[in-house]
Length: 119
Image (cartoon, rainbow, N blue to C red; front, top):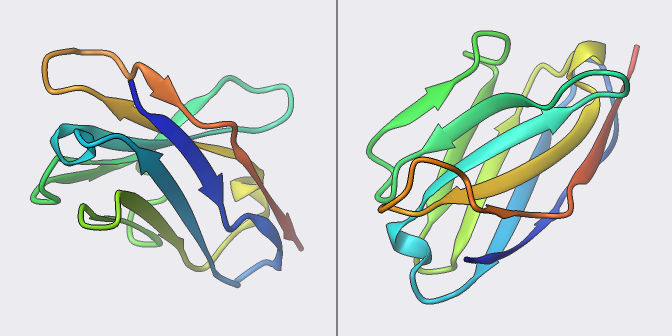
């Protein structure tokens, strides 16, 4: 498992941008698929985006496609989520997660970072 720490959340006006970061410990970070998820109050956690171990493949939820970009820097053990054109409905706690190459589930989760979008 990896130890994950998110940062970069905060308060932003609708239409604004934020970049979330997730720093990972562990020498095997570069082998993991990394994902971002979010959970708004009273709602279930939902998938936002994921990126393959080398960054070659990315996938997004329809609700964020074209506005959010996931990327990673394996030299820095960090994955990013650039969020543009933010909407009030994007407000949530954002979590990063790691899925090992030998598994089908995300087995490491960060503590989350709050994103608030004012209208």
